[in-house]
Image 1 (tube, rainbow, N blue to C red):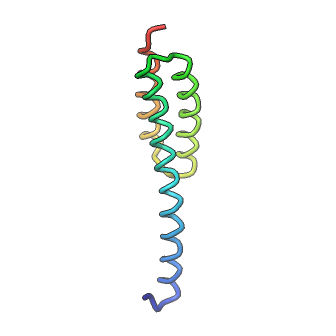
Image 2 (cartoon, helix red, strand yellow):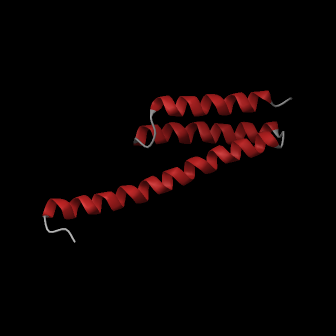
Length: 88
């Protein structure tokens, strides 16, 4: 067990950050999966709606510092390509 106040505080901070990152990681995977499953089902409307939600949420994660801006741009770009490939 830690004896210094700074170390005790660091343990608390790490636990809090770990919990927050776990939430964002799960949320990130689920919103991407929603777009992918809609595109695999060739459901253009559902894919567009899922993409709209994913785009907003991914960029919100950038502002929270969960992922980098370039990573978000790459993910959004690839999801957009998937949605646009669906035949109308």
